[in-house]
Image 1 (tube, helix red, strand yellow):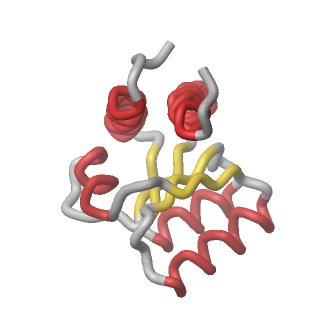
Image 2: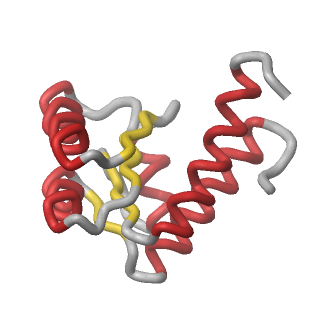
Length: 118
């Protein structure tokens, strides 16, 4: 599974996101994310904590309409972009189910630690 500390779990999730990018299973940016959702291939959408209100609404509405899991991250566009090898990314969609599950597993473990769980 993922590492023991919250930081390690986030780093592991971002490493898996980089792996998904290298596998060609990632689309980034608001329009790229919306396009992958519309095509039915998006399994998970990750959104930076500092994306604009307009972008946040467009992404959230699209994910709700196409029933794609949306996770708001506790860090900004720079860190999300760095994970996929770009300067910035407001949002990233993952199109591979296995990698999406692995990323969610790391993020869920990190979230449970924040809420006081094991």
